[in-house]
Amino acid sequence: MANDSGWWKLKTTVKPNQIDLDHIAEMVKQGYTSGEIVEEDKPELVKNAQIPKETMDEHNEGQVTAVANYLSDKYGFCVSSLDVKLNEDGSGTAYNIVWDTSE
Image 1 (cartoon, rainbow, N blue to C red):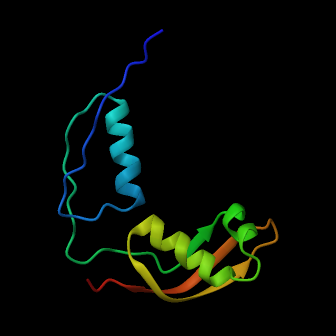
Image 2: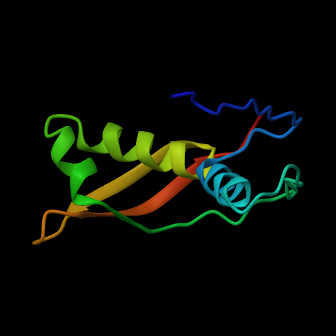
């Protein structure tokens, strides 16, 4: 039984964030072989965000660090500061988020 395989290559001058990567994956599944990532001059980044319970549960000791890492991975920019509140269902709410969008 032979396995089919293929190669793909991401060539970009823009650092894709998690939303970009999710979109690219969906386009590849639909058969597209190319596309465009457009980097906006001033991204609109959230000031408040819901954090999944799984992220909150992973790092009891360093909740703020875990949430900052989650948001950085999701949006592609570092978090300078934020506050975190644990919700009754175990998820979290990040608020007062300050982003570092410098290069």
